[in-house]
Image (cartoon, rainbow, N blue to C red; front, top):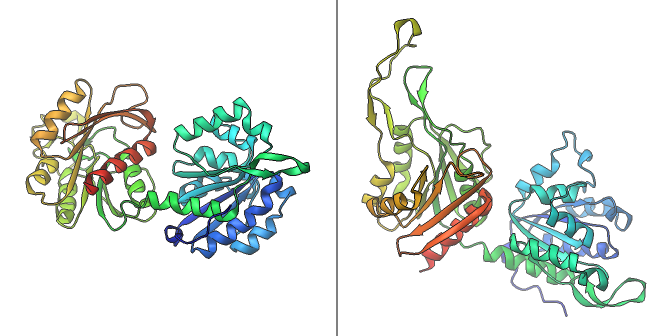
Length: 405
């Protein structure tokens, strides 16, 4: 029996990407789309070519007032899967065939829907539909377990009438159930709604002369992922970042700086109005004491560059915080956990994320990270190698728990 659509407020204003794949139940996706829009969501639809044999692209285009593409090459620069994966607050695949589930679990990207799934780092709701034997097959169940481990949510399938007169489990969940599950999933991650969150990212550049600087390899990817995740959860986010090639995250106020002093000024000016500060930036510890106002010439010989300490932004925030949750990062090459514990206490932090930047797949410039999350209450949590987007979700989860307590 389907649910009554009562509590779908989390859908209001949400960006929903609906992936429709090739099964007889594809016709129900039309009603799912309509109900999502009725609840106030902005909906875009993408399809597999097989899905267009059951429901026409024009149907979804008429409902959403946007094209319903079925091929990566429907887009002029073939980056539609990238843009839509980043655009959506939630992606729903309904119906999700055994084939599409297998592709998602195994990283196969040979059509628009599977390419978008591989690109997607945010919330995912899967509504399976297939014959009973396909649903019960060990391969399908293993693929579903893989997707669940990665954070995907499922709705259905249900017992009932299938195609060709069969009956059994495998029937697509009814549209109101799918929409209710989408609302519940969004509501469960709306745990930062109304909070003012400040995130720092990237490295800083401390000038030696007008051309040269002291810097580091930080790309800003971890901080940008945290800012993006906090915004997805409803927070009002400001991202103060050093030089980075990354594009501004959606719905985030971005302040770009270059030096440690500029970062300190921007952060301190906003600190009193914040509820949460996550200092993911790799701020330089030292800077030239007297940078040259002209380019140093090599024929003048190697310069003697005297260094001085840069402002310790995190320590300053720890001394002056009142109600704020303060999270720091400790990027080390050895003894990361020991150094992080000292940093946690010395700088009056609520949590610190410690990682060894020389480990394979972790640290600067990678899309993945591995870390230890250490809290002021004494708890420590090992975060295995995972995408920085997934780690950002865990960090935001722990911040939300701290706020509730």
